[in-house]
Image (cartoon, rainbow, N blue to C red; front, side, top):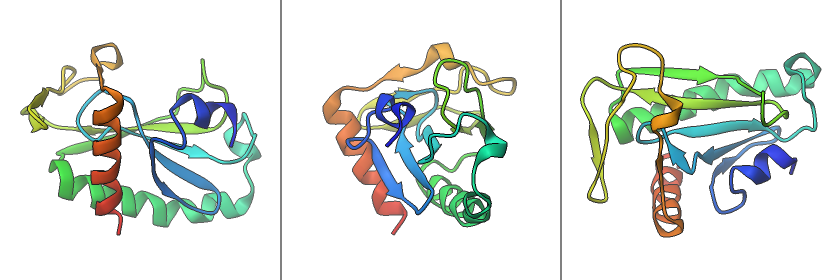
Amino acid sequence: MNPTIEKFGYPATLVREFDHWVVLLRPAQVTLGSLVLAAKSDATAYGALPREAFAELADIVAAIERSLAAFTSYERINYLMLMMVDPNVHFHVIPRYSEPRQWDGLEFPDAGWPGLPQLSSALALTSGQIAELTEKLSSTFR
């Protein structure tokens, strides 16, 4: 796995693995269910990914949206490709909602709603919460 995937906590945060991509729990939750969709390739440019990686995205995006709809009842979803600090190809997947969501006794507001997601307001989870939320989201992909 590339350094970007490892930085986001792989393998502890692995929600689902595909041929060319991994879906990871984002350890700092911007909103409940925030994920990272990362290419397994060492590519640092989106256009440098193999054609097969692009083809696989259709099924992955559909699976992500089904999973997060069931888990968070999001109203909108944002896919952010930032790649400024972590250079390997990846998206931050941020479910968006107008009313806070609750999980495990915690409240997860969408601080930026209805505007841009506020990445700086992310809630950092403990290792136990990461493990529990990763398992919960993994189960929605089955």
